[in-house]
Image (tube, rainbow, N blue to C red; front, side, top):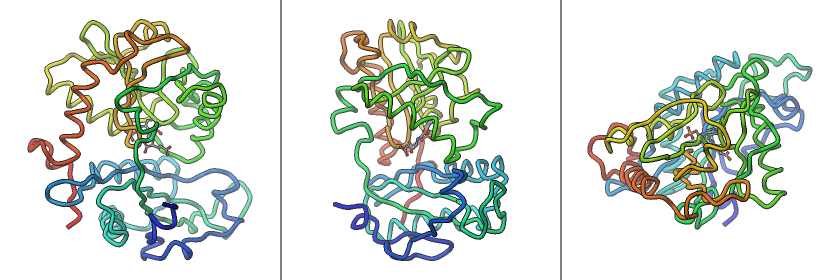
Length: 307
Ligand code: PPE
């Protein structure tokens, strides 16, 4: 199915419009200079209908990104949350991926944008397993990128800003060109930062490790997994991680809204453990999918039911 068929209606500046009408001008500022702020959100099918996962947290991060970028979103958080519900209902999705985005329109070019020309959309479409159908079970291959995750004084890593993704795209293109599924970026000190669109964890001798959030995006799935690790009575240590620690890890997995919890089975051509999804990764995946599909009472507050 094409994107147009899956996304017949898009919320655009306060109204639902059809796919063909959700257009912007070729002289839109964001298209030229890459400044916009966005989110990636998922809704899952549950016994009580479609539920959007951690919607308020995503919307809060969108507004924080806009604050960092000094972009004015002229809609309230409530209005943006309602837009997600309206879009999913209009498109009759039972599960979907949402893309809220604020960007500058075409009133002015030149590096300095027109702050009164901020456009906002919320789109949704069906998006299956981000890293391939078998990725969740079999795991993927990754490469340590030759590109570093940008330094905090070049870009601002707490913002989920469109321009930050040039860094991700360079790394991802390189990885795929060389036959890997995904890229892992180091920070400028040489420690593990994150994937091109995911946070990263490793398991070693029953304990979990993840890099701190100095340069990595403060992932909502990462935060969800931290709750699950505590629930399972496991230990998590946040620290600087080197690439060779990953090589000898018992398990490695990525977390992200799109990637969910995806095991990494091979890194730089080195097989991780026995090359199969590890037991802790599997346990965390089960716990994660139980929550997003409404099967865990403790986390009902993370679900926004569409009806
Ligand atoms: N780091 C980066 C760089 C990143 O882009 C994401 C999400 C994460 C970490 C995980 O964040 P969270 O989704 O809140 O757990 N990447 C989004 C974009 C993927 C895309 O290709 O587009 C996503 O997963 O929605």
